[in-house]
Image (spheres, one colour):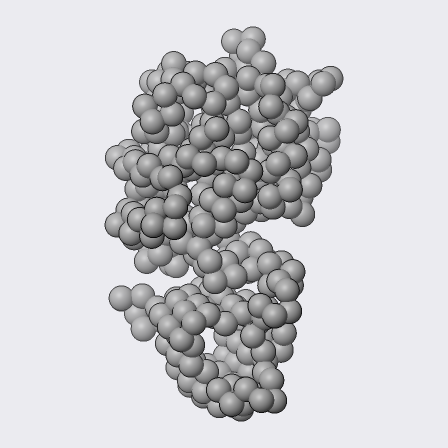
Length: 328
């Protein structure tokens, strides 16, 4: 099975951060978000990746080249009309899909391997299948309603209040059908979302199915807060030997106070009298000056945190336009 990953969007809900850094490259536990996704897919025997890029494509392609060197089979496709909506990114990938069965996901999805394996097993005989949370959606979440045998009745992508029995629709889809005609029709009708196309597909009497995924095993990262939450979850599940914290015999960080969990990358300098943690990840080649306080923070690689700085509930990123940005 192939995976089609939509990684072209602006990521505007992340604030100024994604003006400089593509959302799929935001480090979660010192690893870009899209790498977490690809490793999960690969562990589920999905070994071919078609990735639509657009916003900050040079950064994306440079990182995808690094992943190719690690053995990932990646086809990168520039979606020239990506600014018009995800449907255009999906459309750009259709030739590469070539009518094969595929999994469709945005690049900002974090999912545990066991949850994805279970979803793929449940949907293995379906022409079209989706994942959902078995909870009532908020007013700004897409939803679906089901009949017997997990058959989808309706999909609602509008930002309106939903029926109490509706389920939260997740952006994870498996397809074993050719959707080209529906995608092309959707573009003619000025659709912007893939799910608008699926609604059109269902109105023609076609079948789709949906399966429950535990809400603690899948996260769509649409905000700084959600990125920090997933970072915290991963840090708290790492083996203790993977966590970096103050040890009496560690002269390098002898005068630094660590509050676990903290994850430190390679070639990181932390000056004296700093307090780091809890729930902090620090990327490679970073310098943290003296008397810095970090709490519940992601520090991106190659950052320089000035002395006497306090950062909490933030992603710290050094950009070419400002010395640093604290993203809340």
